[in-house]
Image (cartoon, rainbow, N blue to C red; front, side):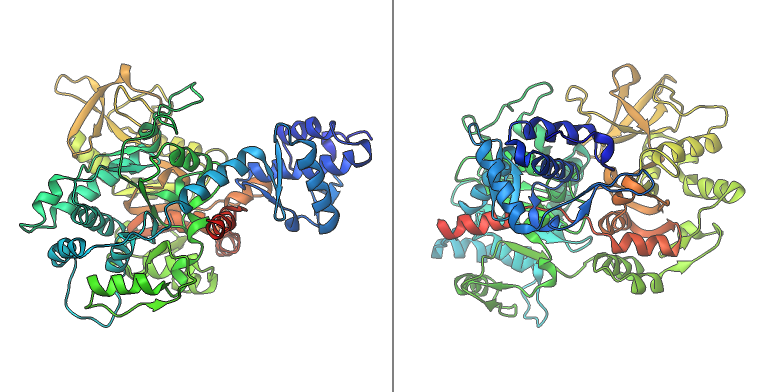
Length: 617
């Protein structure tokens, strides 16, 4: 049978069409059209960030139709014939394996292999570590320096997370903003070293350069706040310098294989990965392939944030809605926690529970309106969220000094100009590169989109016209006070995608790009050696992950078609939680309702694959 023309289907890209046509031509003519449609759906779902296609999601449904474009799309068969068709595709392309059908899901072999690698890497680390009396003695000696040990009735989730994670070779520490993830990681580092007779080689890593820099700074600061004669020797064992995952693995441009892999593993005893929600499935598979079998792995992050840009959402697949569930642990783990923390309430037990996720449920620094509204967004309660908002019709004086969450319609003309000048007054008043960099952390504009109305490109251009009249926005046009973001890794200059800096003259009146290093010290980079940068008064919400600002102005433009799928509850939550003190949302009530109603769900078989491997181990 002839495969229909691409214009028959709305919303697909050329890669979907030609991927499906390539494979469909190899199947029997009697099922070729049905196979083509299923393969188009598989490719489309992979492009949306899913790692597989659950057949139940499309069974009996009409997809790729659009009345305005006069596209009829396709109506898929019911589940049973779809399963039969998926099995036929898997059998047709099994030598070499290119398609995989497994438990109601159709995969490309590549993503199925990634899931298997991650699942096996997790499962081989699920067996509990047994502690000796000497181990407990060493831990109990330092515990009072790490945590309060006064008996309490309310659970201390940071203590629970550290005590439990010590017994696991793989664990997830999951928590929202201000719940003490860095506080917990710093104490886990010390507890790991204390429980070991030898100094452990612990590596800290994050998905981006900015996140790695923040991890280095925050862990160093947290460790500096922990003192005691028994603590200092342990601190001397800890290297707080974090790296990007790409650098840790030795991933190099134009090279398929990283420097570190199964035959040349990373030399470490423990790997802690921060901002794990940003790690895609393929990168996580590379991580597990490059680790020694006995290396422990701890993932730290917020499963409610935006998933990675690439396919897969490993942290969400592992953690799910864990923070909304009551923690239950095997009796052996409960006994271990009680031995270390007799001052805390006991834990509920369930010996059938596969406990690897430990959620931090109480915010230590994030409170007030921001916290209340963040919870409402996370739980999908738009009525509660909207009821708590403060509403203004224009950028009133003092708006950006409020410790509040404010909703305002998009400002125009003089109102827009006032909002710009109020937002970036600290940067305009800066007198040195140091004060300019500090001012950049005061306020940042965020938007979901790079191009189009109320996008990064449009907002940065409009802001520059107001603040720098006569200067045009452009990648190669520099001026004093220009905030910039690095767009590519440059290991020679120690600059990484997502790093932010400011253009400022040096003592010789030569413009330089100024950044802070891992220790917070200023350093200048010659403009001739600067990698690609963009102006960054405004940035995408995706790019803001791993960063924090005193205040955020978040634009929520109208969207339709494919762009509308970007506007999700997770996106709103991520943008909101970049703010430490206040947030101004630019948009309308109905738009917020629509965004909160849409979830960034990604289909994955990872959790099921882990459980399957665990039961077979």
